[in-house]
Length: 311
Image (cartoon, rainbow, N blue to C red; front, top):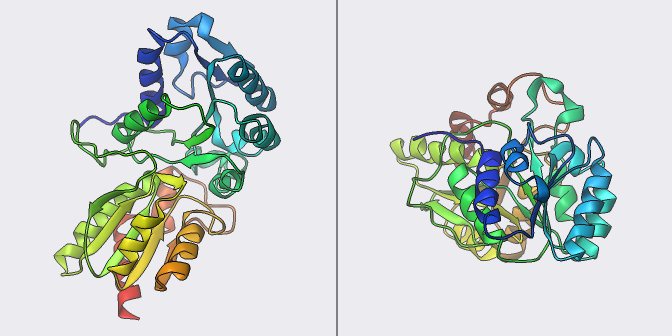
């Protein structure tokens, strides 16, 4: 199956919708190329705004357009969108309840060798802490397509984080179970529950396959909807398992692992372990090299699951 970057799929969905909906507006902060939005800018120049390297202006202009009835999609590197324009995201978008979808491209450690200044390992925590802001991290281009189509149907703020490169698909064309704000169950087992989001879903799914060969049965949840989190799915998976393992491309603080731990400790206390990036500047390298170094791979996840069950 072909690999397509999630950001490219967002552009494709919006371009198709823009054929008949002239209220769709895309905005970029000198990021149309890196955000895969050059085709949109070329096809719909009257529905495209280039702010230049001015992320705070990007968000405020998007909010202003939304107040005028537009459906605004602000596309910018996640590291800058979630940090440099944080106040604008908080006030102009969330507090003002504007129809702005914030597209954080090249999320996590996608920028690799550019280092900590270009990594976004804090954005799940930061954006989730804003009242009225939803946070989504789709796992592949097929799920991204369904998510983008669903978000076109509402007028509420949202932050969508996607990676830079094409990733191996988790789902199959024509078979993408999707319900907005509901986690997707990839497999079910009674030994361990693995809950992952974004690019960590594929290795989590592959880890379950490795564990199955050793007679260890895992439940895997694709928690693309980090906020609002599907708490019912978390409780069900945790209740039926001996332990819970979360996996995310994020800091160990305030992200998916922290949120899952809160739910599990409150509703069905079980051992919870969070696999994440370290609380330190990560090593230099490609995404896959970084993931491998920190054990965020199918083998690393499977090994941690076995450790937890052996304790």
